[in-house]
Image (cartoon, rainbow over all chains, first blue to last red; front, side, top):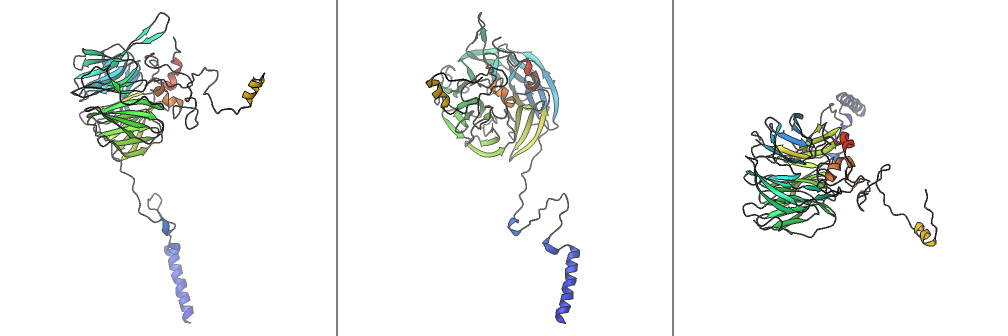
Length: 367
Length: 101
């Protein structure tokens, strides 16, 4: 009798359990909810929230150029302005306040009025590889060269020279010969060393105030390495070397002329490097990884795996965001932005009508 | 057209295993070779990474430092204006001139 009563109670309890859905320890999860339902005790663990993505500050302008220039608002993803030029643009720089921009092109340096988004003046006429401001931002250093075409049709590349232009007047302050086949130059300023990168792969450092042609290689020219680009921040220059067994950044101390290598443990491509003005943060983009480095300590702080390969890189003025350029993407190119604290991919912005190979972020009053 | 050995030395050469070298030779174009660049480290036929098109400026316009890809491109120091008519590489590549002029 007792057993039969319990059996009825047991059956009632079972019916109640079935009605409430508690049978089998299963909880219903509403569609769209994020609560996970473990299928076994072994899989129970603390949920890890993805890193928070901060919004881009307003007022940023990203300049991208091939032979024409496009000005992109990265917040809205719109192309705000276009500047046709029909000259291959190699470098883009802005004054510290963003009131004036300069384009290094195959036909010389052109000045840009960013407020009106127009090209206002041609300052030089020889092909330019690189432009860089001096410390105070009063002079623009222009790495240029000429090509002599002989009667036979053979072309002779003349020695590269560094021209210093006054930013306000556009007039030439001085011209100095650098050497043959130069890739990049950082002249001596305020008693610091100068750095000269050759197209053959040499990193050369010279004494303060010494001629640029008097530079000595800081390491033997290595096989399997290729110079990519140089970024300057604070009292340091960072040279990107790609190759085997791993790509690296060579950091040159401009004060004492010493150098050290920062291995990135990545074999292959190292496309670009950028640094904040104070040199405290350095960012490099490899084949499929972005590196955020402590520029002072010389170590990798964080990385972000990328799903695409990028050819160029620029930092926001506050150093919190990186803009990655793809030369060919879809019908044109693209620019993507990445948050750096912590590294999180933001968004990609298609640039449908040009294949950009130069990128820069214009400082504005808002950022 | 098969190459036929005509003497013992040539025959010995044909008996050797074929090296795994693959020139990136599209159509009847004459590629410019530089050993080591024809095939990438990952055994891909594009030595410049993620697709030839994505890296053409890095090999040509952007830096032009002697990247010997299948269609050999002139370096930007000798031909600084080579890309002047190529605002959009995907569409304007037909405008690229051959060098020497």
